[in-house]
Image (cartoon, rainbow, N blue to C red; front, side, top):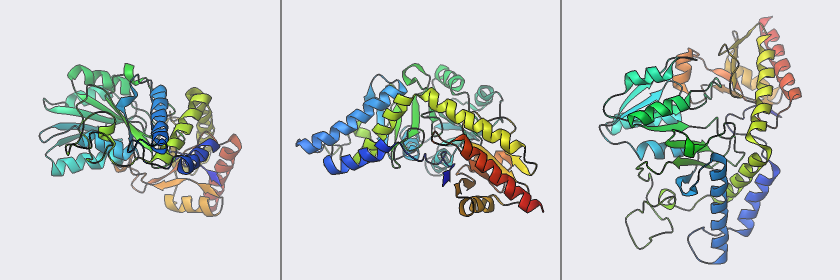
Length: 379
């Protein structure tokens, strides 16, 4: 199988990731923070160690402001619903994944939060467009950093600087950029950052996190057991445990720690340069095929390329690639209805997303498969 669906979940993982999951189950299967015995302490050590590795990766001095979540969607819901109240105004973009769009519109329908959508197209002035939507009650701006449909990036530092000047909180969805972009969160105008563990950080599925700057008055999304202040029925607000109610995914977090360790060892720059080179090779190869329609006109900044073959349904192309060529891609709307609406790709597209473990030969094989499919349908 040639796996080219890394924008959904990276695969394969470094071997030490699976080994860490196995060891956590076999050697530290107790509940971390819920007991003083040695197995519980060992499990808690795994949690603390991985939190520290994430702090190193994201350049965060105080790791207590990094909360473990099930995935980016959980992190985004925690950020948005833990910050906004009735009467607040929220600004999102037309590039957002449904992980942002659906909670935003749920709040609009159920909690009296006003939502505005900004979409100015590729390479345009995002800050000026956002300025036009800002109101006196604007409390939060949310933007994806890198599109999971086109691989294009938004100017998050410029947007963040403007938000900070206006006293508006800024949440960044780093689903496609964590592990590829060198975040320095203590020195950036980003108040909240949601990230997955299972994509660019090479961790298992069911892992992710949320960075919340010290000054952000966030409320916990869940209430329950935290292993602290158990004598009190009120939810503690101390970080991070007040935001991590319930038994954590210790085996998954152990694997995430090894994924981050691998990334720190190899280097973000090395990973990005490799994936960038594969994307360029893919982009240039596809451009030479007459029947291929690329969704965007410019080489993507991230390893994400979406396309259609003229006259062929995207899902049909994906099935042929899977069953005949043993190649895994993602077809459809990629949980990004707003972005496809803006691109006018009403029938969706085929998304190809190379990863660190892909090779140039695999990219060439994929381009060859698309060429064969295009020829077959053009006869």
